[in-house]
Image 1 (cartoon, rainbow, N blue to C red):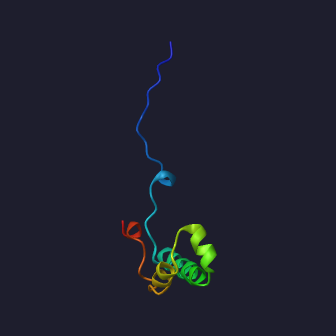
Image 2 (cartoon, one colour; image 1 turned 90 degrees about the vertical axis):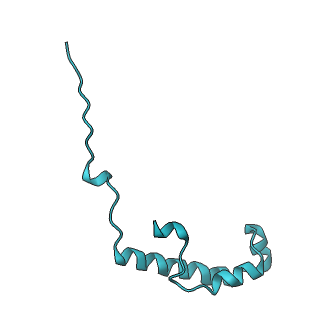
Length: 73
């Protein structure tokens, strides 16, 4: 007869990795590039993604460190 015992083990590769300053900086740069590209879209393309030209302008003028709230968690 074989008995299986399960143990609760958390492997190092499964644990969340600590945020590094370089990773955060790279994400901010990527967000800045996305905002610049958003500001260059034509009105009909903005309509396709459900964004008004005014909303696109406001988003594109945000600073690189003005990141989405879920990045702070």
